[in-house]
Image (cartoon, rainbow, N blue to C red; front, side, top):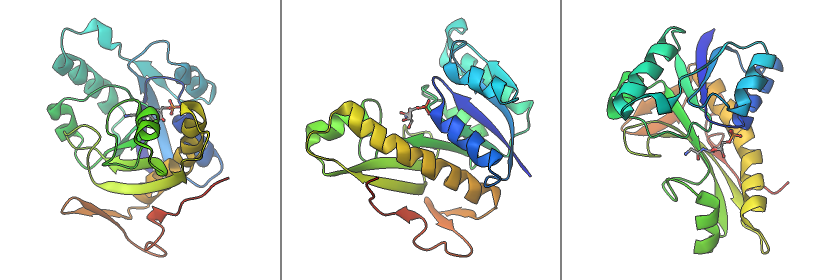
Length: 215
Ligand code: GAR
Protein backbone atom coordinates (compact mmCIF):
# COMPACT_ATOMS: atom_id res chain seq x y z
CA UNK A 1 0.00 0.00 0.00
CA UNK A 2 1.25 3.49 -0.83
CA UNK A 3 2.33 5.77 1.95
CA UNK A 4 1.06 9.34 1.86
CA UNK A 5 1.83 12.41 3.93
CA UNK A 6 -0.73 15.23 3.95
CA UNK A 7 0.32 18.87 4.43
CA UNK A 8 -2.23 21.38 5.73
CA UNK A 9 -2.31 24.96 6.98
CA UNK A 10 -5.85 25.32 8.29
CA UNK A 11 -9.18 23.58 8.75
CA UNK A 12 -8.23 20.59 6.63
CA UNK A 13 -11.56 19.72 5.02
CA UNK A 14 -9.78 18.21 2.00
CA UNK A 15 -7.74 16.13 4.43
CA UNK A 16 -11.04 15.05 6.04
CA UNK A 17 -12.30 13.91 2.64
CA UNK A 18 -9.17 11.82 2.16
CA UNK A 19 -9.47 10.27 5.62
CA UNK A 20 -13.17 9.54 5.01
CA UNK A 21 -12.38 7.84 1.69
CA UNK A 22 -9.67 5.76 3.35
CA UNK A 23 -12.07 4.79 6.14
CA UNK A 24 -14.76 3.89 3.58
CA UNK A 25 -12.29 1.54 1.93
CA UNK A 26 -12.26 3.47 -1.35
CA UNK A 27 -8.78 4.94 -0.93
CA UNK A 28 -6.16 2.24 -0.46
CA UNK A 29 -3.39 4.32 1.14
CA UNK A 30 -1.62 4.52 4.45
CA UNK A 31 -1.90 8.09 5.76
CA UNK A 32 1.46 8.08 7.51
CA UNK A 33 1.29 11.62 8.87
CA UNK A 34 -0.41 15.00 8.68
CA UNK A 35 2.00 17.92 8.94
CA UNK A 36 1.20 21.63 9.24
CA UNK A 37 3.23 24.81 9.06
CA UNK A 38 0.89 26.23 11.71
CA UNK A 39 0.79 24.78 15.22
CA UNK A 40 -2.84 25.92 15.60
CA UNK A 41 -4.18 24.44 12.35
CA UNK A 42 -7.60 23.01 13.22
CA UNK A 43 -6.98 20.02 10.95
CA UNK A 44 -4.17 18.76 13.19
CA UNK A 45 -6.69 18.02 15.92
CA UNK A 46 -9.05 16.22 13.56
CA UNK A 47 -6.19 14.11 12.25
CA UNK A 48 -5.00 13.24 15.75
CA UNK A 49 -8.55 12.24 16.70
CA UNK A 50 -8.53 9.93 13.68
CA UNK A 51 -5.42 8.29 15.11
CA UNK A 52 -3.01 9.77 12.56
CA UNK A 53 0.46 10.95 13.55
CA UNK A 54 0.64 14.75 13.43
CA UNK A 55 3.51 17.21 13.39
CA UNK A 56 4.01 20.87 12.82
CA UNK A 57 7.00 22.78 11.52
CA UNK A 58 6.30 26.43 12.31
CA UNK A 59 7.52 28.53 9.39
CA UNK A 60 7.86 31.56 11.68
CA UNK A 61 10.87 29.95 13.35
CA UNK A 62 13.02 30.03 10.21
CA UNK A 63 15.11 32.79 8.72
CA UNK A 64 14.23 32.02 5.12
CA UNK A 65 12.14 29.83 2.87
CA UNK A 66 14.98 27.43 2.04
CA UNK A 67 15.67 26.66 5.70
CA UNK A 68 11.99 26.13 6.46
CA UNK A 69 11.56 23.90 3.42
CA UNK A 70 14.60 21.84 4.42
CA UNK A 71 13.20 21.29 7.93
CA UNK A 72 9.79 20.45 6.48
CA UNK A 73 11.32 17.94 4.06
CA UNK A 74 13.24 16.33 6.91
CA UNK A 75 10.02 15.94 8.87
CA UNK A 76 8.18 14.53 5.83
CA UNK A 77 10.94 12.14 4.82
CA UNK A 78 10.94 10.24 8.10
CA UNK A 79 7.63 8.80 6.85
CA UNK A 80 9.08 7.74 3.51
CA UNK A 81 6.08 8.90 1.46
CA UNK A 82 5.23 7.72 -2.04
CA UNK A 83 3.11 10.85 -2.36
CA UNK A 84 2.97 14.19 -0.55
CA UNK A 85 -0.51 15.68 -0.70
CA UNK A 86 -0.91 19.44 -0.32
CA UNK A 87 -4.38 19.99 1.12
CA UNK A 88 -4.77 23.70 1.73
CA UNK A 89 -1.06 24.11 2.43
CA UNK A 90 -0.68 27.85 2.04
CA UNK A 91 3.06 28.21 1.52
CA UNK A 92 5.02 28.94 -1.63
CA UNK A 93 7.52 26.10 -1.98
CA UNK A 94 11.16 26.54 -2.99
CA UNK A 95 12.41 25.00 -6.24
CA UNK A 96 14.65 22.65 -4.24
CA UNK A 97 11.70 21.30 -2.25
CA UNK A 98 9.59 20.80 -5.38
CA UNK A 99 12.46 19.07 -7.19
CA UNK A 100 13.03 16.76 -4.20
CA UNK A 101 9.41 15.53 -4.52
CA UNK A 102 9.20 15.61 -8.31
CA UNK A 103 6.40 13.31 -9.51
CA UNK A 104 5.18 12.68 -5.96
CA UNK A 105 3.82 16.07 -4.92
CA UNK A 106 0.13 16.86 -5.58
CA UNK A 107 -1.86 20.01 -4.92
CA UNK A 108 -5.48 21.06 -5.04
CA UNK A 109 -6.29 24.56 -6.17
CA UNK A 110 -9.70 26.25 -6.04
CA UNK A 111 -9.95 27.31 -9.70
CA UNK A 112 -9.88 25.83 -13.16
CA UNK A 113 -6.16 26.26 -13.75
CA UNK A 114 -4.49 27.89 -15.59
CA UNK A 115 -7.17 30.48 -14.71
CA UNK A 116 -6.74 32.24 -11.37
CA UNK A 117 -3.52 30.93 -9.86
CA UNK A 118 -2.72 32.41 -6.44
CA UNK A 119 -5.11 33.72 -3.80
CA UNK A 120 -8.76 34.88 -3.71
CA UNK A 121 -9.76 32.73 -6.66
CA UNK A 122 -13.53 32.91 -6.02
CA UNK A 123 -13.51 36.68 -5.63
CA UNK A 124 -11.54 37.05 -8.85
CA UNK A 125 -13.81 34.63 -10.72
CA UNK A 126 -16.84 36.69 -9.67
CA UNK A 127 -15.10 39.94 -10.62
CA UNK A 128 -14.32 38.57 -14.08
CA UNK A 129 -17.89 37.41 -14.58
CA UNK A 130 -16.94 33.86 -15.58
CA UNK A 131 -19.91 31.50 -15.88
CA UNK A 132 -17.92 28.35 -15.11
CA UNK A 133 -15.52 27.98 -12.19
CA UNK A 134 -14.10 24.98 -10.37
CA UNK A 135 -11.07 23.25 -8.96
CA UNK A 136 -7.97 21.42 -10.13
CA UNK A 137 -5.73 18.68 -8.79
CA UNK A 138 -2.26 18.82 -10.32
CA UNK A 139 1.27 17.60 -9.84
CA UNK A 140 3.42 20.42 -8.50
CA UNK A 141 6.17 22.08 -10.51
CA UNK A 142 8.26 25.06 -9.37
CA UNK A 143 5.87 27.59 -11.00
CA UNK A 144 3.09 28.63 -8.59
CA UNK A 145 -0.18 26.68 -9.05
CA UNK A 146 1.13 25.08 -12.17
CA UNK A 147 1.90 21.54 -13.28
CA UNK A 148 0.41 18.51 -15.01
CA UNK A 149 -3.35 18.42 -14.41
CA UNK A 150 -4.75 15.18 -12.97
CA UNK A 151 -8.45 16.07 -12.68
CA UNK A 152 -10.69 19.10 -12.72
CA UNK A 153 -14.29 19.67 -11.69
CA UNK A 154 -16.38 22.54 -12.98
CA UNK A 155 -19.33 24.27 -11.34
CA UNK A 156 -21.64 26.97 -12.68
CA UNK A 157 -21.40 30.51 -11.35
CA UNK A 158 -24.99 31.43 -10.49
CA UNK A 159 -26.65 34.84 -10.47
CA UNK A 160 -26.61 36.03 -6.89
CA UNK A 161 -23.50 34.08 -5.95
CA UNK A 162 -21.14 35.69 -3.49
CA UNK A 163 -17.66 34.57 -2.56
CA UNK A 164 -18.95 32.27 0.19
CA UNK A 165 -21.62 30.51 -1.88
CA UNK A 166 -19.26 30.00 -4.80
CA UNK A 167 -16.47 28.75 -2.51
CA UNK A 168 -18.87 26.25 -0.91
CA UNK A 169 -19.97 24.91 -4.32
CA UNK A 170 -16.36 24.49 -5.42
CA UNK A 171 -15.32 22.92 -2.10
CA UNK A 172 -17.92 20.15 -2.50
CA UNK A 173 -16.23 19.25 -5.78
CA UNK A 174 -12.76 19.46 -4.21
CA UNK A 175 -13.84 16.81 -1.72
CA UNK A 176 -14.89 14.58 -4.61
CA UNK A 177 -11.90 14.98 -6.94
CA UNK A 178 -9.00 14.91 -4.47
CA UNK A 179 -9.74 11.37 -3.22
CA UNK A 180 -10.22 10.35 -6.86
CA UNK A 181 -6.83 11.75 -7.90
CA UNK A 182 -5.03 10.14 -4.95
CA UNK A 183 -6.86 6.85 -5.66
CA UNK A 184 -5.54 6.85 -9.23
CA UNK A 185 -2.04 7.55 -7.92
CA UNK A 186 -2.37 4.75 -5.35
CA UNK A 187 -3.47 2.39 -8.09
CA UNK A 188 -0.42 3.34 -10.17
CA UNK A 189 -2.66 4.62 -12.95
CA UNK A 190 -1.19 8.09 -13.50
CA UNK A 191 1.37 8.48 -16.27
CA UNK A 192 2.95 11.89 -16.81
CA UNK A 193 4.54 12.65 -20.17
CA UNK A 194 5.23 15.99 -21.86
CA UNK A 195 3.56 17.87 -19.02
CA UNK A 196 0.30 15.97 -19.41
CA UNK A 197 -1.29 13.30 -17.26
CA UNK A 198 -2.81 10.17 -18.69
CA UNK A 199 -5.03 7.99 -16.53
CA UNK A 200 -4.47 4.41 -17.56
CA UNK A 201 -6.81 1.47 -17.28
CA UNK A 202 -10.51 0.92 -17.29
CA UNK A 203 -12.82 3.91 -17.79
CA UNK A 204 -9.90 6.30 -17.82
CA UNK A 205 -11.15 8.28 -20.79
CA UNK A 206 -13.71 10.80 -19.70
CA UNK A 207 -13.21 10.00 -16.04
CA UNK A 208 -10.41 12.53 -16.08
CA UNK A 209 -12.76 15.36 -16.91
CA UNK A 210 -15.70 15.91 -14.64
CA UNK A 211 -18.71 17.52 -16.21
CA UNK A 212 -20.31 20.61 -14.69
CA UNK A 213 -22.78 19.66 -12.01
CA UNK A 214 -25.05 21.47 -9.67
CA UNK A 215 -26.14 19.71 -6.52
C1 GAR B 1 -9.16 24.69 -0.35
O1 GAR B 1 -10.18 25.39 -1.02
C2 GAR B 1 -7.95 24.50 -1.26
O2 GAR B 1 -8.29 24.30 -2.61
C3 GAR B 1 -7.26 25.83 -1.09
O3 GAR B 1 -7.37 26.13 0.28
C4 GAR B 1 -8.57 25.54 0.78
C5 GAR B 1 -8.20 24.69 1.96
O4 GAR B 1 -9.33 24.20 2.59
N1 GAR B 1 -5.89 25.76 -1.51
C6 GAR B 1 -5.23 26.76 -2.09
O5 GAR B 1 -5.74 27.84 -2.28
C7 GAR B 1 -3.81 26.44 -2.49
N2 GAR B 1 -3.34 27.38 -3.46
P1 GAR B 1 -9.24 22.97 3.58
O6 GAR B 1 -8.15 23.31 4.61
O7 GAR B 1 -10.59 22.91 4.22
O8 GAR B 1 -8.91 21.75 2.79
